[in-house]
Image (tube, rainbow over all chains, first blue to last red; front, side):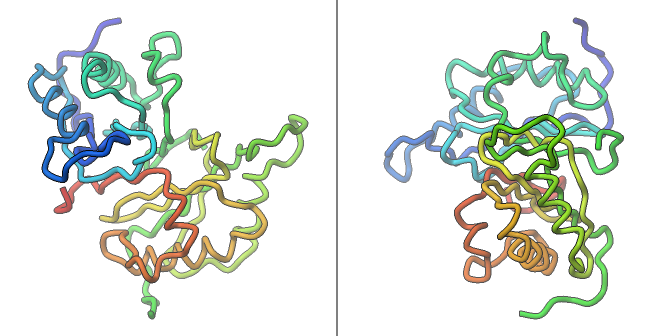
Length: 131
Length: 131
């Protein structure tokens, strides 16, 4: 598939829970898996139209790390069980595919495998024809 | 606590997944638990400032029934494990308490017990000072 080079208005937000411990016991001041995930994403060149945003707790603590995608008239999607090391490329690819849609519904065959199995919940856009 | 009698603009939306089977095997055309929950809520007098909205799948299928609260500059909250029979009053009370807040964060001591233990995820408002 191809992605538009023009930035949509408003852009897609890729929200990352930076407080996530991913179930690990760890000293209070250690860099958490959620922060590592955010830092890894921030070190990448983001696809067009995508804004990275750190959030202090998306409250999906039992199934972290956790991210969400939202923007414009699209459904908001929350994904869990994200690995802070191995999943950065998948997330950026998925975010680009999400941004390429009008409604946030990435066609099933194009959807990253992780998205297929780890959707925590989704929320419809404020105005939608899907319900 | 007291609730404001004036309707906020925009109002709070209480989103209900009407497709939820709550893990039950059931004939395709049977009325599903999610639809029962919606119907029960719709038969009530809604608190001021709250709009009920049916949604076709919030994709929290393993922990249904599922609802979400959102509106204005508040955090969006998704709650699972909702019982379609016994939880309607709790949801309406929780929705009123949510609407009474500016940011969607119901004070812990005032939060319904079910909300404390069954938050699936939350999403920050588009513009927020909380992250």
